[in-house]
Every structure is written in structure tokens, then in C-alpha cells.
Amino acid sequence: MPEKAFAIFTMLAILSILIIVHECGHFLLARLFGFQTPVFGFGLPFGPYVSIGRRWKTEFRIYAMVLGGFVAIPELGDESNVSEEVFGLKLEPFKKFPIWQRMIVAFAGVGFNILFAYLVMLVMLYSIGKPIPGAMVTALPSETTIAARAGVLPKDELVSINDTPMTSPEDVVAYLGGRKNTPVVLHMVRAGKPLDLPMTTNDEGRVGMQLGGTEKTKYEKVEGSPLQMAGMAAGELSSKTWGMMQAMGGMFANLVPKPQPKGAPPKAQPGIQDFHGVLAVIKIGADIAQQDWRQLYMFTILISMDLAIVNLLPWPALDGGHLAFMTIEAIRRRPMEEKFQGEIVKWGFLSLLALMVVVMVNDVTALVTGKLDMKSDKDKEKGAATQTVAPAAKDTPAPETK
Picture 1 (tube, rainbow, N blue to C red):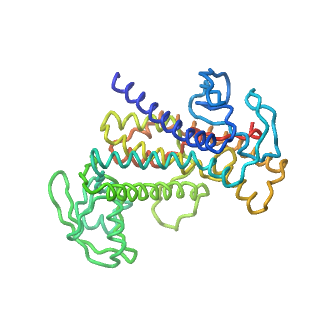
Picture 2: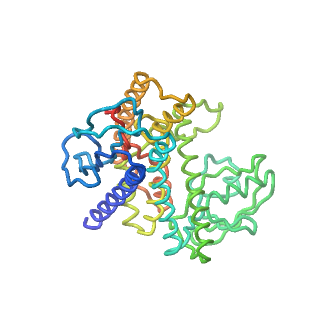
Picture 3: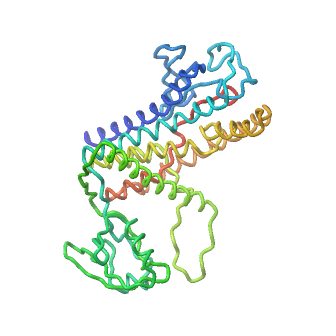
């Protein structure tokens, strides 16, 4: 029990750091350009709060709903919509800022999350090396697939194909995808014993098996000049981010169910039920911390990039929403009509609250049913990559959003 409590505390600390990093991005760039920042809040701006001091013309607050954070930057919106106060604090006369400065401030939180993820990736490569997830068969869609007929079984570890080592499921997909209707030999390990299974791919370069990582992620020590290590960190971060974006895209695409071919075996599709939030992140992260603390490096990287991607969505009340309004303003060379923009912000904010409710229900349901009880390091990492933590950051509110 003490280990579990410490693991949960560790995850709360990581999430808090990521939120503070995001908000510091907005705050520091806003102060640099001379924007007003009347409130820096840790937590969502609802209910009671404790003021912990005032510095740089900013009041720092901790709110009761600590699962989030924000920086109030009233001049980030349309300067024609002038308010005399925000969050109960009087404002100075508004200044006119060029749109490029406003866009930089709106993007700064996302930029800091990306930079933080990159730095953690760099530290991971220098300290413990590059993670090698391996490739293991997690399931066979049916008993009639090419792999099943060749003798492949779930939990078989795929070491190499022909003479080419396989270090991840992506390696397997890429290798087979480039060899359509081609005989190949899969070199496997089953129950600690080597096994060679010949088969021929279909006309799509597939053999019909689902892959995941091995039970234990290995780490390969990497060496190189600082410039080479910096490039390697950038490449690894780009690869992981692209995988996350594909996973998220799949969930959004499957919000509308697609008819499956007649007679085809049912296929599980990610959808809205797979949108998770803070509770799921804490649960998965705590399990990771208990099993192998080294996995917290990658988990932190994925959650930081998740925050960046979600906040870039063109959704009112998120950074992407502000950037979308500013892009329209730049194209039209004048701000959107105040009443129309206010309606968009209002309904966007309500829809965001509705999504938070869905995410909370998904988290509680998953916790009760044991869906989040990951059984392997790679499964945990995959789970982290598919979390959406939009409720954890509601950034840079302009006065009209309150």
C-alpha cells in the first residue's frame, strides 16, 4: 500500500509539473511582450481558491478543482472587447498588440510542452538509453489467417524476419508491407524456445496477426556527439508523436461506426469510449511506477505531447480555438463580430464541459471494470498514448469566455 500511494503521488506530481510547464509558456511569453496577466491559477477557475501571493502584476491562486490550470490574458482576445476587471481584479487600460504576438502567446503553452517532452527524451537517451519494445503476437483475428495456419500463437515473440531483426511492431508492419505475395520466415521465441515459421504474405503484405510489445521493455545504450544525440531525440519524439496522432485520428474517425464487410470477423474499433482523462492517466502511471520506474520517462513524454496535441485542436477555450479566431482575423483583416464569436465560445465551452463528463464516466467505468489494469510495460505505454487530457488544461481565458 505505501508503494501504491507513493506511485499515485508521483503521477500527481508529474501531471502538476506538465500543467505548470504549459501555463508558464503562456505566462512568460505574455510578460515578455507586455500583456496583462492578472491571474495565474493552478486548477480550474471554479469554486473557492487560495491566493498565494502577488508578483509581476499577477495574483497566483490555487483553486479547489486542482485538475487543471490557466493564465488569464485578457488582451489575447479582441481588444475592442474591453473589460474593466477579470476574476474580480481591476485591469489596466488595454494595449493594442499585433496579431503575430498574440499568436505566439497562444501557442507558447503547446510549445513549452513540446520542448519539455524533447528535454525528457534527451535525458532518457543519455541516462538509460533507447527503449526497445520488441514485437509479440497479442492476438490472431481468426484461425484461418496466414499466420494462424503457419502455426503462430498468441504470446509468440517475434525476433526477426528472414535475417532482419524486429525491434518493434512498427518494424514488422513496415517489413512485411514491403514484401507482398512473398515467402518469408518468421523467427519466433515461444516459451523460451526458438521457432522458425515459414509463410507467404498476401497481396497487401499482411499475414493476419495483431502485434504489441514484449512483456518487458529493454533499453539499448546509445552513444554519440551532443549533436547526434539531439538529432536522435528529435527523431524518437517525432516517431512517438506521429503514432499518437494516428491513434487519436482513429478514435475520432470511429465516432461514426462504419459498416463491416459481410462475413468478416468482428473487429474492435477505437471510439469515444476510449477517450480518457486524469484518473486514467494517474492509474496507468501509478502502475508503471510500481512495475518499472524507467517507463515513467516515456509516459511523461507521451502525456506532455498529448497535452500539446489536444490543446492545438481548434476548439473554443483551448489554445487551438484562440489560434483559429486569430487566423480568421488575419485573413479578414479585422476581428470576427463580437456577438458571433461570443456564441461560438459559449457553445464550445459547453461542449468541452460535456466532453469532460464523458471522459470522467469513461475513467470511472474503466477503473471499475479493470480495463486500465495493464499487464505489460508496452501495454501501459500504449495506454498512455491514447489518453486525451483536454480537461487538464483550460488555457488563456479571454474575458468573453468567463
